Length: 303
Image (cartoon, rainbow, N blue to C red; front, top):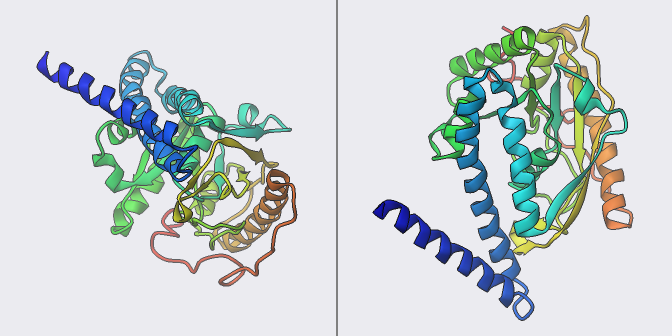
């Protein structure tokens, strides 16, 4: 009972502090950054706590594959209410509902991409995540219970086994997977893509399922941590046509990664111009055709 009382006091103080920074923002604009960061973390905690319970209940009734979808939607609505930020998902081919299983790929900009997943995440899909996240209270518990694939980047053997498990999930349970082929967040102020790692493409080829690119406009006008910018607003996101992998082998992965990245980069420019209402600069790709050199982890499903 005392514990619940302390939790109640903490939440009340947290909400009061968040509201204080929101009220201060008309006078000190940077206060909006602090307010929305606080609101985002609280939204994530609430959704993760709900996710732990939802995963237990859904697992008990045999619907565990829907756990990440239902929690993603809860985060979408909580974040929309607490921060005023959302993603407008354009899916002209209705691929989120009709293509299954698949490897969904998206560009990775900041921590706000978690909200993007909340807005577009398809049913019967799971994410991959760093192994260290498994130890994070609530979020890690939920991810473990809901069937996330954890990858230990420091241990190529474990990563290879985890990706093999993902391939089996795709084939046996028709479970889609969402991945960020850049491997890390870019935090770029202008539209760009980091070189793509090949693990996701090896996975799609091994499982013989289509790749579905999902492109989000550069949203540094909404969130740019380096400049302490965090505004409300709507960010465009588009689901592109599926890219078939039937009949492809490991020898085709380099070209598959290169062509997919090129397609996503062009759409990234177009969406960003739509979001900003003005042209954006084009940058030369870095690396060999924008694809990272193969490492043990990158080729982890090819073995």
